[in-house]
Image 1 (tube, rainbow, N blue to C red):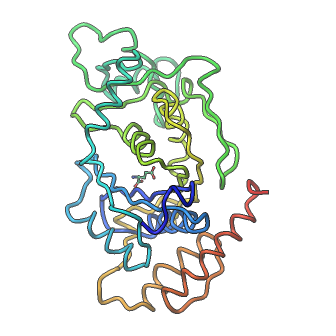
Image 2 (image 1 turned 30 degrees about the vertical axis):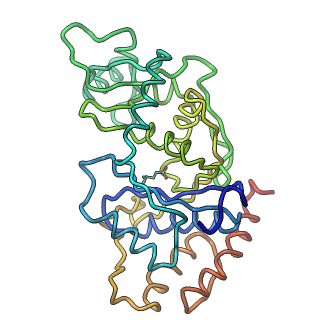
Image 3 (image 1 turned 90 degrees about the vertical axis):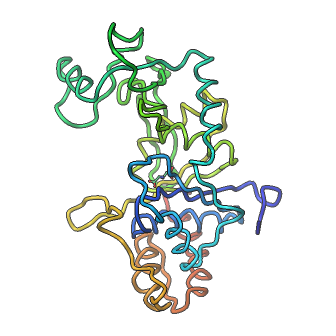
Length: 308
Ligand code: GLU
């Protein structure tokens, strides 16, 4: 490792899902987390979040690693794959079960949506789980998922100050409800796995896209019930296409094939990503790019209202 927790208390990470090649949106998240680790003389880990087996694309993990290397973003230590860490999630679930915080739920997505409508809730949008199976599965129903109880009432309001987006808060009971930690098909929920891994890897700073801002209160709550510390959070704006939709791996793919010259890499990937983050960098070599981008990130942070 270039730096270790012994030399800096900062441990950050980039945690891509291997559902396709690195794209402008994921490059922006990778760049922000890499720069933040470098500015703090910290460690930058790489974790492949490959637990959604239906969305994994064969070879995308190695493709992402190669693209990061080509961009000059070198991670510390060995990259990890969530699919190789399943005993950690099993142990965390056991802890939650022993504490009586988990129950089996037999509701389908449609049933949840219908009970929200019956209770006068909005059509479409995010359905807050109404707690139907909180006191046991209805007779004849099979478990479709395991859910984590969130506390009811005022203590369920989780607030935090995002280093980029400022103060945030969410009423877990009122806006999310008891949420899934293990799906009926045996897939681990992102929320559980990310918290277990961030805890086990000693992550002190999470830097990622703002599409995950509203997952953060669930993660803070999980950290509390698992006895894990809260890392700091910084969510960078999400790159959208012309119609304001979040770029997907399909729409925003970047060409990182080995034929691409350093000039193309800069012009088509690194410089636009830096510009999106508000960094003033004008390099024509990849090494120079990073030499300029690291102090530019420090200056960018100093201009954020939260850093004042
Ligand atoms: N794996 C998630 C994604 O690719 C990111 C998770 C995180 O950074 O917490 O969107």
